[in-house]
Length: 205
Image (cartoon, rainbow, N blue to C red; front, side, top):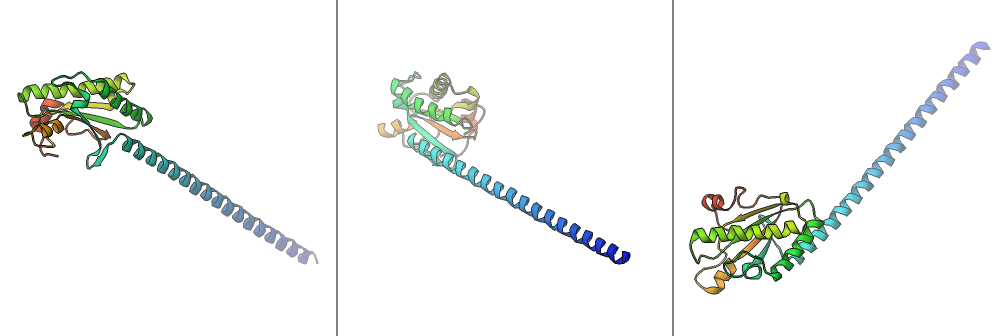
């Protein structure tokens, strides 16, 4: 009888251990499922936030009237809007346009820009190079005064290089007198400055 009792007790203990093991497995499986569900929910929330940020960014870029290119988003500001002829002082209308850009930059602190100044081909190449550099620097200075960190802004001048229209008539020359602002993380046409860029750059738009 005592042997039978011991065997029964042993069997009950084994069954209890098996039940406890199954219970632990069930609880662990439930915990894993809950953790996975939380991961999926977190990933969904992150995706929703990123999608909303992207839509907001695209809307703001569209408001700036920037266009998407292989180089990134480019905002083109007419030179006649920003400057008087032969001058690098920014006009009031240009300051308003740059104010919109500064607001965009403040809202998107991860973004950097490259400012590129261009002229038509009237006058000497040296004078046009200097003027384009001064104009790019003037745009940069306005943005810095608006609170944008200098390290987020690069400014280069390219003189009469990279025309977007013919310089044979007034309308074409007006289009070539411009400032282009590249929005993104790229270094632009060159990272070394205006004169070196003009001499070493290759490839038109």
